[in-house]
Image (cartoon, rainbow, N blue to C red):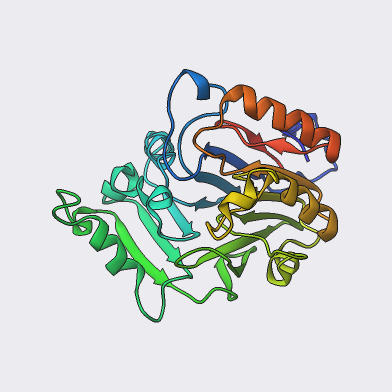
Length: 291
């Protein structure tokens, strides 16, 4: 797993280049955006990740990082993408009203959520967020071809030919789902906004991430901070590494940083994590990984 790829022109003529599979981080914070001088290097936007599976484009979560992603995408022309939400807390959906492709009549956006049924639906939840007195324009303002798709956590989604997305329920207030994206024989797992059990590991999470090439995991707290935050629906960076070790994950990525974490504090976590499990990364905006 690397942060760069070998140019296709450098490969032997007889070697067929593997389809591109990349992960780019546009937002890495949890709870609330935290811009400022202390968060410049790792970034202050809330969750949003761009996943490229060959020609297929997936977006994981719609936090404030979705706005710069949308502007970048639309500069390249109309888009066709699947936007997978872990859940509908504001830090994970507040970028959606500012997502430029949603206002492009030539773009196609499919939005997915697996935590709302049977009591709610994704369209109605987003309509509630984008309604007076909370927001001045309704979800119907979107001019792109937008569809809203509800599923049950635990289902497997076939989004595009060759792209399989497995899902699992997570332990978070109001529900959440984790995702495993499988493409070209490799896999990326996105498991954020989940709280680990008091003892052992969540068997659904272990099954979802087992053997993955890359695990992006909710590491909001440290083990020392966690006891005062039991029941808040988040995990720790040490638990991220323990889970990765138990499940035979290739590389772990510490993600969903507490908004109060400074760059210096994240540097310290990065050093401690490297000592605990070499190769571990701390997510930062702009980072691009190849599973």
